[in-house]
Length: 375
Length: 103
Picture 1 (cartoon, rainbow over the protein chains, first blue to last red):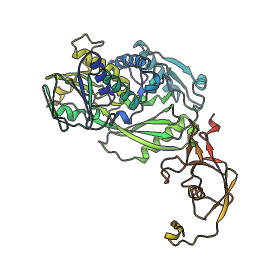
Picture 2: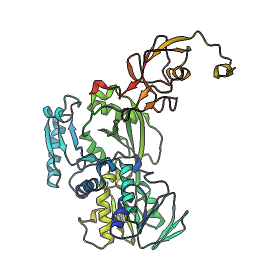
Picture 3: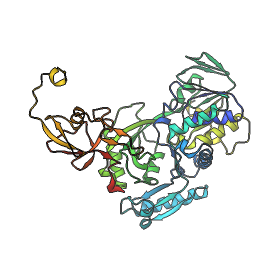
Picture 4: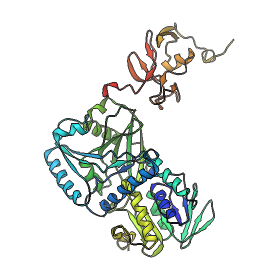
């Protein structure tokens, strides 16, 4: 097997395949976690997903993350089962939030309604005047670069996984992966886990996968005493995630880290692979975060980083074999949810590759769903 | 004679003055930053890390890394490499994150 991409998804796939006894080469044109994984926040969220296949995948994936944390130790991943808190600014937003929480509940999500006067118990520094919130105890966090490296290490410990970094794939056909640094690799199947660059990999095989980059910035504050206990965000964030617009959307997602700095996301823009620093976007994120947590007004931001989410037009990942190339498995296009969805994605890929009954219907993630529109 | 940057640029600095570092008098030249004055006086560390209590001083020296934080006239989290030192300034070793008000 060849897995293309040494980010979170590639690491999880390599681990899942190796544990089933397969021999795997993991290729990456750069280093381990050099792409979107290294620029992520490490969100493991069910709270931001409405009922449907992505939520089903997320519920299973968060269960698998808990198992991984038990197996590898929470410190190896900086796994924090901190829970999420979604807050509503006004009565109407709270009513809508409660309605969507009730629907999520039917899909296996634990939700706890939090009236306005009880928000302070969960988050003492939260701004006054909010209408209420919903607590999602299943939401959690990992440090994505650590987590991907830990999974790759566990995969290599099987003795069946080779990591080939700084290796660019130059050609792709059935049974053959051509590379610039290690010649031609012969293999039974290929897993395309190249994230935001998966479209280019698919194109090498003649397949079409319309993955586009959706840029996001994260602000990093100076180290603080514990100030934000959960993953806290305003209800409008969910609408931003679901938006198909190329324009800027931003709503603050605020969380503390084990090391002390508070991380502030999340902006979404489709501006290609432009790495330029956008001061207006950073200012908007900071203002929105300070609106939720007024204490942040007096706190300094030390730096900002950006990454490119792998965006597919219907906001669902592509998981499974290419319809015309059964040897080419797609495992990409998770947008901003790739860390959270990685273990369940890998499980699905491994089950499909092994000809086993998958734990859920993979049809909604079928890579062929874009082909017809193109033709 | 020992050559320093002042000789190399033929500087004619104005009158030196004193400030205090952890209660000890230190001499500085007008225009120097806190970090430059402390370095010149042989002090390389003026912060202790939050975890592990290890010494820290100037690292990047240009305001980017936030390693050289110091307490200046009672204000914590001041970047010593950017802040000009003034006569009579009270500079103290920084411990902790300097955000006791948020605890």
